[in-house]
Length: 90
Image (cartoon, helix red, strand yellow):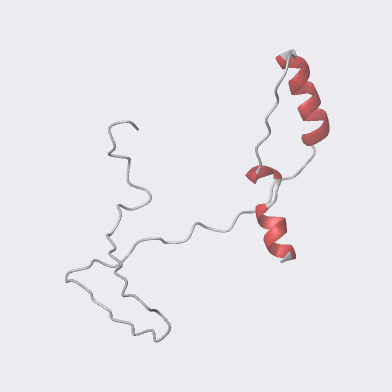
């Protein structure tokens, strides 16, 4: 738990929001004063999220004696996480 906290709760994984009536140069000085000395953590490499190519339909049936009604789940493969967005609004 301590290693997870040290890795993912580090300054390089944080966001700071400053709101209100202020001078940007003064705010920047204060941010540097209070947060500038914090050292970033070494992040682990990104995991490989690619899925194997699915050539055929896959079906699974699971009997549950405690479920009073049947259920259906349908899944689709998504584009890779590194692929550029193809949505018209992005």
